[in-house]
Image (tube, rainbow, N blue to C red; front, side, top):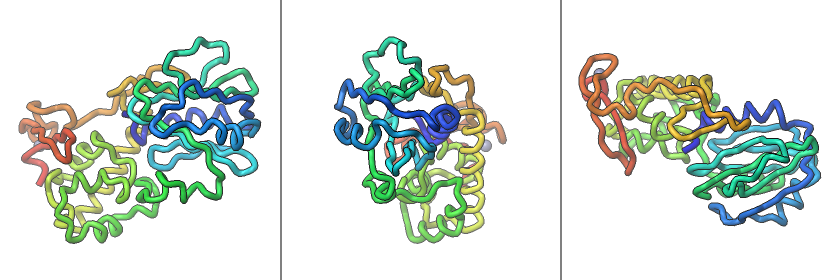
Length: 274
Ligand SMILES: [Zn+2]
C-alpha cells in the first residue's frame, strides 16, 4: 500500500514536471473507484486549468490549479500515478487520465480500485470530508510530543493503534509504526495513556526519523511501487523489525517476535521494547 513517504516521493517527482502545464482533456475509463468519479465536476473544475503547485496532506496528493481549484488524488491499496507520453498504450487498469498540453498524460492505474479522484474548490479543501478530521502531519511543527502526550492521557488502547490513528497523527502506516516503536524502545502493546512525556519525545523523534529516511530513499518497495515516470523504485529502507519474526534483533540478538495488533502484523524485540 502506498504510504506517506511514497506519496511524498511522487509529489516531489511530479512537482518538477507538472507546474505550468494545462489539462487539455480528462478521460474517465471507469468511474468505479472507492468513491464514484464525478466526471462532470472534474471537467468543470480541472479541464483547461493550469497546474500551479503540488502539495500533500496525509496520503492525499493535492494538485493546485490556477483560478482556485484543486485535484485530490488517493492511491488506495494498489494505485499508481504514471506520467507517460500520450501515445503510450493504455493498461486495462488506467481508470482516470489527465492529458496535458505537452502530449503527456497523468494516469491513475489502480487494479484494486480503492483509490480516489475528486475535484474541489480550493477554499473548500480543508473542509472536504476525508481531509477534515485528519490529525497533524508528523513532520510539521504543529505535531509535538506535548500534543501526543496530552491526547493520549487515560487511553488504554495500545500505543501502536494510537499512532496509526489518522485522527491523532497522519501517515504512520503499519511498517513505520513497528519500526518507530523499536527505535524508541517502546512495546507496541503498551497502553498509550501510560507513556511518559520523555518517551513521547523519543517516539515522535523516531517517527520523524523513520519517515524522513523513507522519503530520502523514495519510499519502501514492499509493494510494486513505482514513481511517476513508471520506473520501479530502486530503494529499500532498512527494516529493523518489520517482517523479521524469529530473526535476531540488530541491537541485542534476541529473536524478533510478531503478533497481531488491531488486525495488523506487528513486530518487536521483547528485550529492547518495554
Ligand atoms: Zn533487541
